[in-house]
Length: 518
Image: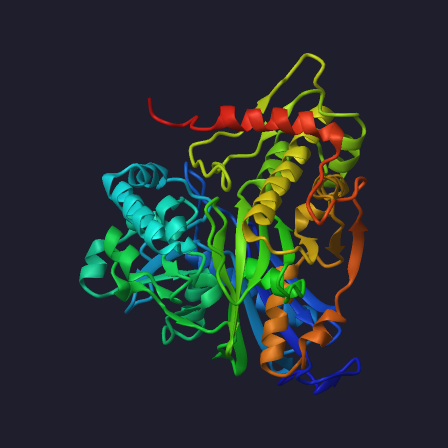
């Protein structure tokens, strides 16, 4: 056989979109038809190398990518000639460097969860240089009243940003020889797919590294000079809609959270998307201008497609799914599906508080040295109490991020949509709706990053014509309504949870700076 027939099961050649999502724990590929039905799939788990740090093997990522693409196309009973476009969604701020000539990586991918640069970050945040920058920016703010300068006067570095993980890992000899390439996962895959011809990323991925200036839309020469990072190692930044070609198939890349935002059809200012996977990422569409935050929200490029440029403000909590998997490994429960019932089986957590900070605490506390902890344990504490405390902590972090967005952006919330594996937990979703005082809609398809990059790829080749067409393809699984209605669009906590939240916030404070050196 030379190939499959031009038409099979009533489906014509060239009538499918292929989408690959490279996550923290898996690489997944789906084949979508025009109704966004999944016609073929293939998933391969990813192993993080954890010996006091979090790394991923570049060659495993590449071979896994090839495997899932072949597997999904085969599962659909198709060939690559049946695929109109390929969309690639990747986890962000996970990077490696490699030899420009040979394409051989100098080291493993260093994950966004890695904490090895925490001491370096802490040292810089306390340095005289940062104090001078903060003071200069305060003076400039007082003179100009530009909010961006106020934010700069308060800015601190984070281990989740690439900046100091790259400083820590950089191979200086290769840099000096002009032979070093830096790239996030999307850059590495594009480099491999084009056989080393293209060293590029897109704006959505670049803007999440912490080295990209989202206001000027370029790599930050000021930051690079400040920490001695040469601009020569960085990839070219292209539109989200820019296409490369792989096996005669147009392909484009997009960061996973921005792809999930697009998959949820959050195209309008005030639309909010919450993805709860390994971590929780909450994004609000802020329109054509980046949001300037003083509390730790991060301005990222949602997508740049031709003349259209959309910004998002983002807050995140790093250890959502991580905490639940950890509890499962401790055998607090056998199946994740049981956790909601376990939480509902008790009236409360019996005073137990859980702090989900295996990778430190992000906005609004921004403490990489915080520890994960249980507090308030008693002889009467059961597994169900522990599980409920863990699930409550996920909803409590959601509330923290949501309140920052309300307080800082002053943008009326239009709609709230949730996705990700943890969003399948009804207890977390109902408590989140109660704490927000707003209805929260959960999509039937939790693979929003895959769907989003499929949407962008499909629009780029005319597979789908308009965004209104995409909105009609959305399928809601369940809408969670709050037990207490919100007032004037603001979150309103159930009164019963006020003291529980206060205890939990006290536990957060006691977990902070735990790993600080005496």
